[in-house]
Image (cartoon, rainbow, N blue to C red; front, top):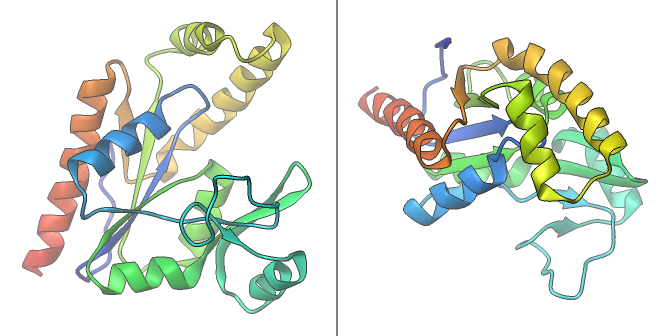
Length: 201
């Protein structure tokens, strides 16, 4: 586990990444229940909202022209094309929450994290955590157990996961999700310790 320098300031942006099937969504959901004062980063997208989705709550829904303009203006921390739609993280929302002293948690892939590490700035409060599976064998078993992908899709995800795991060294911390409850406690402790250190500065 590595511990790289985190910038000064009161709030903090937490970037949490993991290969598909490693439980990052479950970890974040539990953390937010345990810490109602922590904030989930809201992504932006050009896809149409679903029936039960609300703007600025589930997503920021932008037109393609607006999204592309925000990218050109440097107003997106990261962005990518997924299934023909644009997705990204608005800079303004994250910055406002951090300035207010909030802990902002973002779940994002390795490529998005690399963009954020460049666009957020080295002197700003950024904490990155990578969730690892106990082994590739266990990851394959978890993906198979979900019954949501074909064997071919599972092997494709395993290949992507192996590439992503190689990038874990870029993150401030790594946590192995052997047991979900324990993983939640470990991530919680990392975030809380860094937040406490920042308040003392």
